[in-house]
Length: 120
Image 1 (tube, helix red, strand yellow):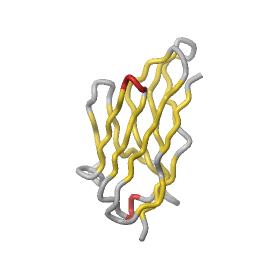
Image 2 (image 1 turned 180 degrees about the vertical axis):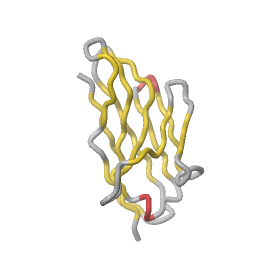
Image 3 (image 1 turned 90 degrees about the horizontal axis):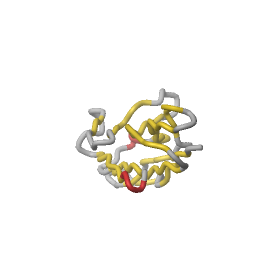
Image 4 (image 1 turned 180 degrees about the horizontal axis):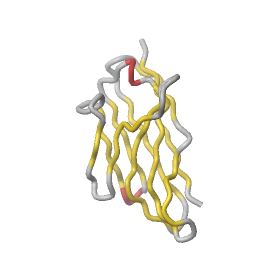
């Protein structure tokens, strides 16, 4: 059984920074692409950034230059460094990972979400 767990959300003032972490745990699995999505109240969940197993990154234009996604393959962990935060970045942030296991094959696993609130 594979689990994906986020941490690091919270309340921050506009212009501030937060770092989100997401760790996958379990046994006998391999992680491919990992990503961060967010869902604001009343809106659909949307991709923010993704990173391949080789380190290739992709960002939506609204966070380009402010957010940085990275991963530590030895720790099965992906990070999202968020700088110059704006009120419109307020949302629940979800991590996902494309993982293959011997028992279940290839699936996308989601974390439970972590709240990020940008407000003065």
